[in-house]
Length: 224
Image (tube, rainbow, N blue to C red):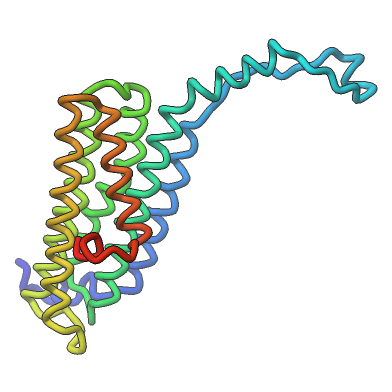
């Protein structure tokens, strides 16, 4: 079946795959912010509004500050998920830039990857609404694990069937593979911290993500 003429020519455009990926990531990143909603009445008396009289309303200010404080778990998970999508977008784009061409199987591998990307807003909303739940944290981690596993499968498949550009050195394959393994190990350790407290898990995952996003000039961290 896979050797039919159609299957031999299907899904060969890396450029179209890149364009689709960019669109899915953009939508997923945008959907994250839709969970940030503050319901606070800021209505002022009509007379004050008419004459633009600024009145300091202690009750209103406390209400707004309280609403922002209540929103902090959602802000935290929003930051974590935006970093997650940013890091995995960079990882996928790096791989796509190394491909000389694609094929039907590689295209479907990356479509599976985009499936995991599209689930991030859901797993984020679940965690932000139940930030103390270990189950919600594990669901979120499984989403990250799916992203890493599929990215690794893509890399190994493309290398095995000769879809990598000739000028890409062999060391690059080992480096990218090691980077995925280490990152997933860090995420797994962070998820395991939920046994103590889910906030510990989130804090560790965010720190690991900041390391990958900023690439600090620390020899040990640069090897991760």
